[in-house]
Image (cartoon, rainbow, N blue to C red; front, side, top):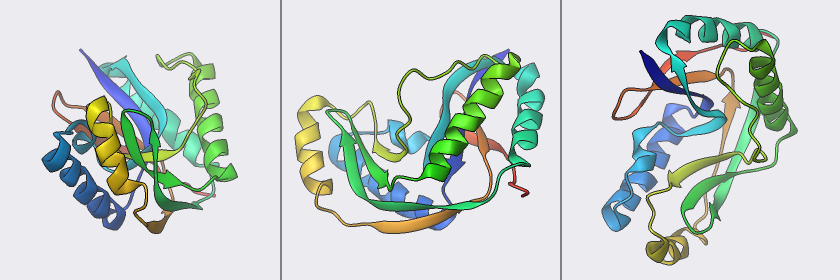
Length: 180
């Protein structure tokens, strides 16, 4: 059997709780539910299908990669959008985060053991609060609410999480630890 997976930096509980409040608001006000199906996270490797039998190998690969990584801080500030469908918590530019994304992608792609392809889109770190189910006609109203809203937080990135889709939502099934 195969499942859908993705790799991410998952936000700690205190940030996740705040993000879930905004996701819940978007559900109640605009009917958006897609973003509620996963914990607050920064996607490093976008969703892909993989045979469940390869899951342990992928966990081991992420673990091996993580041993060479150093924990670093990520700063969140205010909100931004990918018009006209996505509103998200914005992340301040971070050379460490870009490097983590690029190195992990390169590491997994060059192993040729997993169905992961180099993402053609440029990496833009963000934490979604409304995703592809925010209707274009509702976007302007939703964006009016969030464009002036202030928010600041930081999180210490100490590992990479692997998430698997269970037919309803995304579950964190493994989190590596940076060991350097």
